Image: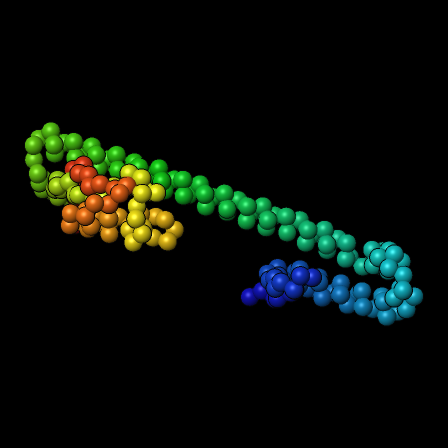
Length: 183
């Protein structure tokens, strides 16, 4: 497990590299000894920096930490990019799957068959479902949309089916769907 350290901003970080932890402890001890042995360093920051540079491996350590930090940031950015790429791939695969469903539905429609049982799946043509379609969101009255002004299609559909007139909405007939069941 990593040892916790704290940044100047007070945020916790985890040092997972055992050599970094060991080097940090060594360098901190070297700096403490250097300042203790040379009291004049307490008041002269420039001299203190020069002495730390010359007498310890702090600068090399900082360079190593800097490279690892940049690498970790690049990996985080890459992971962020991969996440977006994965979402894009998911969307493409969903469209591809819908296209395959449309192909299968075309076969059943061409054969004028409502249900087809095969060894690997059962295909059933579903009836079009009535759904509420919003024509103009601005005309939808209070009670038929959510707070973010997103139409509540279930409420609109129910009201339209019960004969209510909803400004900005109408009932439409959807397209035939396809149900595929596999074992």
